[in-house]
Image (tube, rainbow, N blue to C red; front, side, top):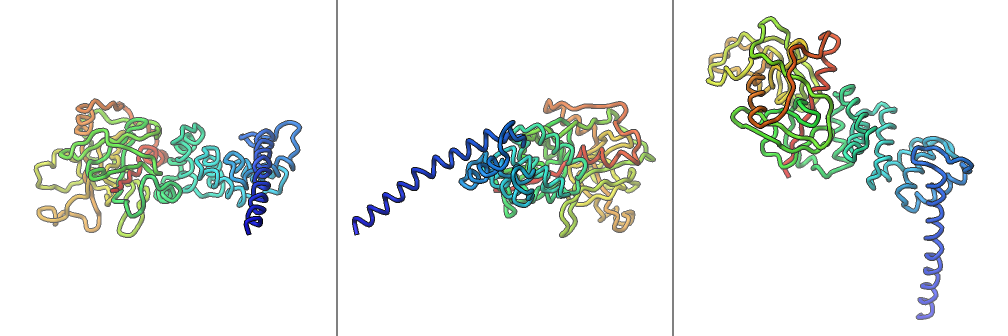
Length: 373
C-alpha cells in the first residue's frame, strides 16, 4: 500500500512539473504574438498564437483570457465566435481586467444592449480608462431610458455597492459640476451608500434638510455642468421643462422629460415662497431633478408633487400630478454657503427647445440610487 501511494505521488509530481512550464510557455507565446489592441505581431503564426492563447486562457492566465476573447471575436487563427469571445472576456473582466470590461461594453453596444454597455463602461471608467469614460458619458445621454436596467445589471456584475435587498430608494439629480450632483436632501437621507447610475459610487458633500437640498460627489466625471439662470423671476407664459427618473407603482424608474408652466394653483403653507409651483407632471422619483427654463438653464430643483387636499383640493387638476421645485435662488444660496462652485449663464445652451431640450435634459439629469447596508 505504501509503495502504491508513493508511486501515485511520483506521477502527480511528474505531471505538475511539466504542466506549469507548458502553461507559462503558452502565456508567453500568446502575449508576445498578440497585442492588447488585437493586432497580430509581425511574423507571428495566427494559428499557433490562437492555440497558445486558448491554452493559457484555459489555465486561467488573466491576460490570456482577454486575448482568447480577441482571438474568437476577430477570427485570429480560428473562426469567429462572438458568444465564446464574450465568455472569455467575462472571465477576464471578473478578474478586474479593464480591457475586457471595455470590450464587453463595446460588444454590448454593438448588439443593441445599452444597459449592459453602460454597466461595463462604468466599471472600466472607474479604473481611469479614458475610452470607457468617454463612451459612458456619450451613451448615458444617448440612451437614458436604459439607465435603470444598467444599474440593475451593474449589481449583478459588481455587488460591492449593495444588493437588491439593500436598495432603499432612488431619485434624480442635476450635474452642476463635472463630478458634482445637486439633488434633494430627502433623496440621500438615511443612505449608507449612494451611487449615480450605473453604479458610480458617490458621497454627500453638503446637505440641508430645511431647504431639502444636498450635493453629492461622484468618483468620476459625469460630463459638462449645466448652468443656472441668474435671476429670481419666471415669466408666467414661459414653457418649463423637467428631467428626471420617476418610477410609478410597479414600474421601474425611467428617464422622462415633462413640459409645463407655472401653476395657477395656490398652497397655504409658509414655505410656498421657496418653491415654484408647476403644471408639469411630477411623480415619485422626480425628486432632485432639474427644472429648466426654455433655454436649458436650471431655474429650480424638483422637490415634490403638489398636495391635493385642503384648500387646493378644488383647484387641483384631476390626475395631473402637478409639482413643486425649490427656486434656483435658494439652491444657489445653499451652494454659496458651502463654497461649492457652479456656473450661471445669461443665455442657456439650448437654441431650439423642440429639437434639443430632451438631449440636454438627459445630459444634465442623473439617476441617484440609495442603499442601506
